[in-house]
Image (cartoon, rainbow, N blue to C red; front, side, top):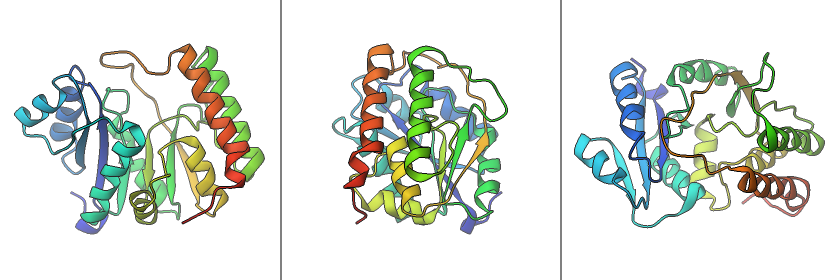
Length: 234
């Protein structure tokens, strides 16, 4: 078991994940009891909150859909309030694998503020189409503006230290997205990556279909290359 001073919180945003949330949380409970978690139900219109309450999961229920940024900030406020040293962005769709959490923590102990999971370290890029192009362009834009090479900026498995927990909890404009990672790097945050593998979705469909992926890519590029020149720390 982890010492209280080393406790890790997995923040699991969940919007309409009734088909996948149970196996995700049940795996954590049965196989990784040393990891704490909180499911943040983001104004779901399906039975996600009902299932979580029925199973006795640790949950925070948002009455309306705030989107990933508001949902994740809610989890970070919880992490700050309860004194967690580490917080992890962890998907509720079954793609993220909890066996990488402790290796990420070990990497963070080397003096990093953020540790990102990378699907591409030592591997060929397994994504195709617009998502692959978008990831490469976002990585290039981060390197051009910060000098930092990040191989997989769009991987959602990310660990943050106490300083970053406080920053995300207190700043409404800190979304858990590549442009915020880039902004934090530009302002001195130390970032590292560890190799990870992800599973296929347990159920449902990814939001990032080709059209949405293209819009997401353009929004990230504009933010990183242009908007960040005018963005200020609080």
